[in-house]
Length: 132
Image (cartoon, rainbow, N blue to C red; front, side):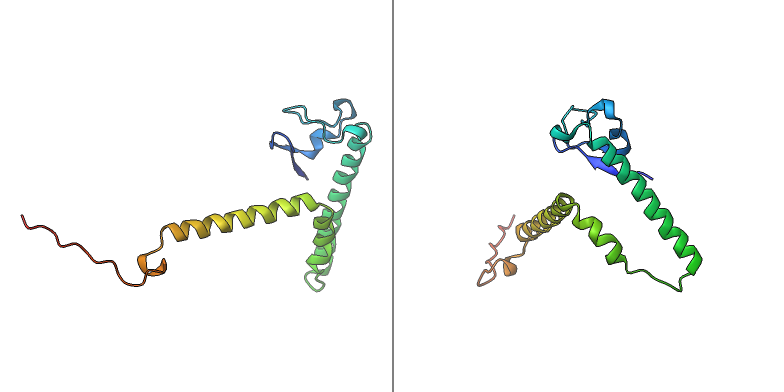
């Protein structure tokens, strides 16, 4: 199982598994940005623990689901929310992206609005076409 990560500098995506080699200094493979400057020797081990724990959790959830056959349903929020809360930047980024998308959609709608939606009092008069 893989966990995707994104560089805070060049914004390129890379798998977390590529960062767990201690000799690489816990840096972006593309631009060299240091992800944990003061913890370059410790961070790869933490990344490896995250990957192992992620695999163990997903495997255990699948095993429990196969044993119970749908007779036991875990509350998804109680499994997912603590993980999401441990990643505040990811949540903030997703929220900011959704807000920006909504604002852009609203602006696009306002630009295309018809005369009656723009707050105009009366329909604009049409000029007669010249004959000929």
